[in-house]
Image 1 (cartoon, rainbow, N blue to C red):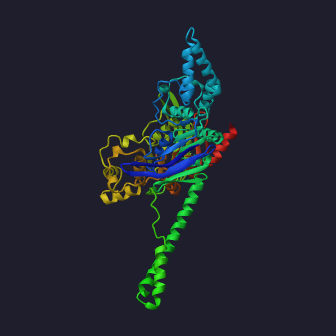
Image 2 (cartoon, rainbow, N blue to C red):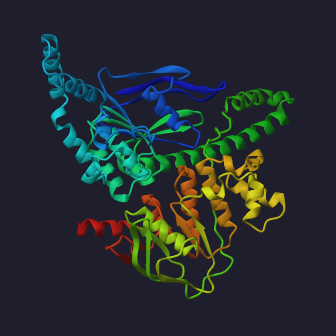
Image 3 (cartoon, rainbow, N blue to C red):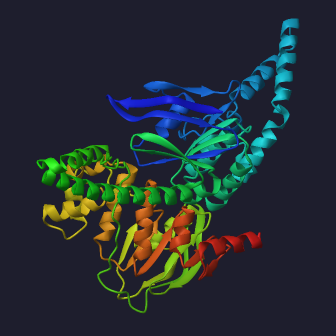
Length: 531
């Protein structure tokens, strides 16, 4: 059990949240949600003891072990993969290291012998003899296969490091598990494995995530950070969303009724307060008016961008034909004889475990890279716009403010027009004067989406557009893409995003070509049956 007791955190005297009183119990998984900047990650750091709250304290059941998913991909570069996972249980590694030192001695004292006996007993209680095999099981489950286990961490790709750090957090079935965005950079198989693992885990789990499907699958409770406070709901993300929408609607309706009643009472008081025969009634109405709660509903910290892609023209009969496309990146052939034809108004999800292959394909389609072999042919009526997974070239070192930045990618001239479009993406007032080079990941994505909305293209290509976005921005983008009437080619790790958008699935994994007009859930079910 872990509990926040009257916890408050303030920056420069301004509270981020206050009066947080929540007990997190064993066997439950709590999803922490809220707008960017609401304090989700900060709250996890308070629970882990990494930072101190301004007020209040954290209580933990004595003897329980906390495990935290680390975000620093370079912190363990000097360690082998297996040892990195074992370091998830600090005490176990300390015992192993001390044992190794003692056993390395040619002979040891009686005192050292007694110490070894104590260590062996504690090691046995912690199931230490199974530790390495348990670590291997975790790694393999996440897709880090045996050939990587003895490598140094600095020899791995960032995506592989993420999986190792996740295995570290899960190692040894911790009593309390804190995870910030655990599905980032995970492929579909790894996410599904993690979901199954957490469903079986009888620990206290707290997770911050922007993946709606993941929250719906694993969470028993939702903690919503909004209005500067925390509120606990029983149920998953969808339950929280439906409940809060109904409650907001009821509050609005009640406020309207109260306002109408107040106006009626004010009119009566004004009309009859000077009339002696009606003065008693006027006084009672005045008391009734004072008892009405006419306070405004609290303003939510959540903000939703307005995403709406409008093509300048409809696409014709011919959209795209790809024939025998091949490409080698480094010393690896990532595309091998890929062929497909895209039809008008299709929304096609490209899937597969190889992110480099999907990004390479999209770069070729966008004209940013040449294939080694094969041909691509766009229809003469098509116009394309591309959302890259790495947008750094658009922002790094760019001195322009956002008004000038957007002008460079549009036909807009007047500042009021540019500000209007930036306002749709939540850059209002002084925010529109930020330099492009200082933007956060989520802000960069919103700028790229704004640029695409102004392009008027009738074929949109998206490579992982939901990365760095909060839940509200993902929901807005999701709705905008569903409404878009023309052709979309995309890839995403967001399960719900793919399921609600795609009407065709193409898997370009080498040696496993799959192309069918089906939804994402049906595709996953077919893959399970094949395995």
